[in-house]
Length: 76
Image (cartoon, rainbow, N blue to C red; front, side, top):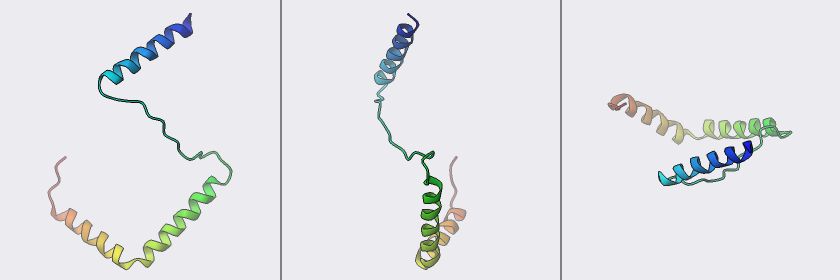
């Protein structure tokens, strides 16, 4: 009977969320426990870092954006 109570609560909770305009979705993400995951992340990070160093236009754009942010008033 405990499983039935839990199932009922879950169904009520989900119905409440749907009634408030939300819908369930399923998201697949990389498995961080998979062998070789850390090495692949490191490899990709090195590629991005090398591309950023070589892209002087991107660096100039980002520097200008940072200066612009310092000059703007941001609302919290």
